[in-house]
View 1 (tube, one colour):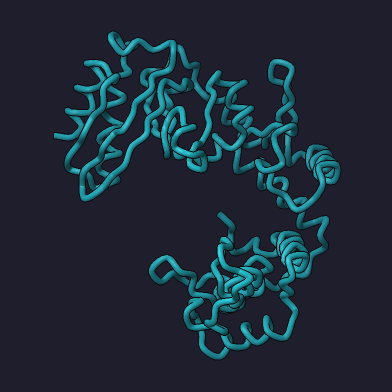
View 2: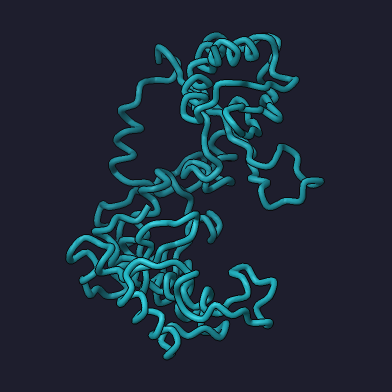
Length: 318
């Protein structure tokens, strides 16, 4: 999530996106783009159905943003920071000017790209907690080459804003605050109870899947964009973390108050016939919180859970 007070740090992204859109033939400084911004200024928060030319462009049929050129322009203006989302209407952005969305003065800073990139690099590591320099570019998601990122990170390490760690021969970057939390954490063997957590596929812990595989021996793939026939685990699979250990993953859907677990996959070192001590109780607690969060009052369970886990889910649903 972008902090409004740090909107200034997004400037390198805005310029990068503007150049990217221009290569596609969409210029955020063109007269038609400026006319859209002027229309938003006059009308206030407005959706794509209320802005620009609503006619379809045959050349854009089948594109991700639809056949209307005005929608492409609005997305380009949003990416370039000329417009922001004020609220949503039925899933659509209601666009407005940044100065009317951000707190007063939040977008006024005129900062060099180098300083903005410095903040982006540090914030990315903060968000992940522990991040490999060798992680994929998509994990870092920065508008600069890797060499520039490494230069900026080296400066942040010299300033004490980041810390370089060697974990079994692999370099990670973290923050002093995260390192202090790790050092203060109780010994896992002596911890009185371990919670079960269901993680979202895009949870920051899961960003660097290679790092997760190295640290936790958990091989995770989000298969939303895979054709169904090529999915091994399911459409929207949630990792299950028990203390410091991944124990399972499951695919589920919730409709009209019914949570249906489509598939549950235990990790190879977990026997569903006899769960490790404390896991069933922790699972029941997590399942109850999950059902409450979803507002689900009914439950459909799959095969493969094992008796203890099945009973834990059933108790949670009562």
